Image (cartoon, rainbow, N blue to C red):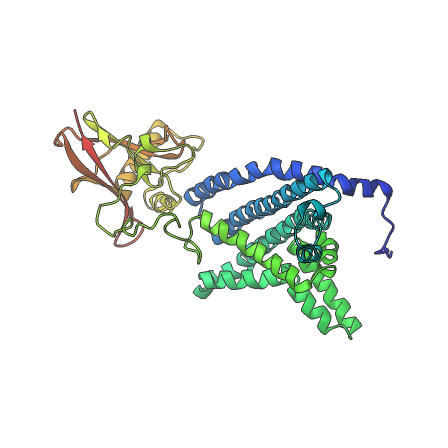
Length: 442
């Protein structure tokens, strides 16, 4: 079935087009606050995924897609509101004075009037802004879908192609350069560069052009651009093509890099300091010099997590020091080793006896004391009683113990060090987990 491209627009649709700016402003303004705060929620979920899963690159790319979409929509709606604000300002001036400049009352020179008449009138500028304000909203939706499709396509490529190659020993595919390269290639497809080149090259070959059209349509469904392909071509064909293509890829890259910056990754544009902060000695490399607020539970703010371990406060009173260690996914490899070598029972089984529970308790206690090397001022504590519990502040799951500190000096600093030991390796591999200084007071 063939559809006519040029059809008469119904009267009801013309009326709706004239008043659509009200819906644009309502949606853009209403969603901007949500979109501005959404990355914080995504970041929390991303951090939980980092702690609780193996966190393959595919998971990260999916979260990255959510970040890019939120930023792309925020940028698009922000531009739409900005253009509409100017449009409304000019509309108010035109409503009050529809005849424009009164040169007789202004009493400027004739040359000034001639020069001003060469420039667009207020009405011309209102019509120009009306066009681009409407298009900015449409482009925000179209380009956001394109950006989402591009990132999700990269996720599929990583999962089905790159990950098997990485597992087979081809480590080049695990580098950032490989990710940027495949993202660039996918973006060329998603934003129409490849279609433009191919259909122009095949313009004199109808059969080949139809075959490529089918391939392009399949790729379009994969990267989501097929759903708004006609509308995208309408915009491209009625404007400067390369300018629109450049706008699309720039829009995507800005949303991508802003997302990378928000994630505090080592991206090409990530800056260690703010443009308004020129202090150069904030990151001095020194041993046990920088205190981390998330090591102390009374300093945690809403939405923050314990990254590795925490104690209640930097000032400790009493004879014991409560210690919480986050249950990260990397513990599981050690627990699997304990299960295989010592017979740890990971889940309840029917028929378990009191002796089974008692033996399991002894195994997990010994395992945690072997996995976690806890020292204060160099003194090792290897017979602690560990408990599985939720952190009372962050609700994270982890391992909790109380360290006896009654022999430590009062009114003095003490250094708590928690290290992680990979007991599954031979010899066991020890890695730094965290250093938390505290002061014991009466």
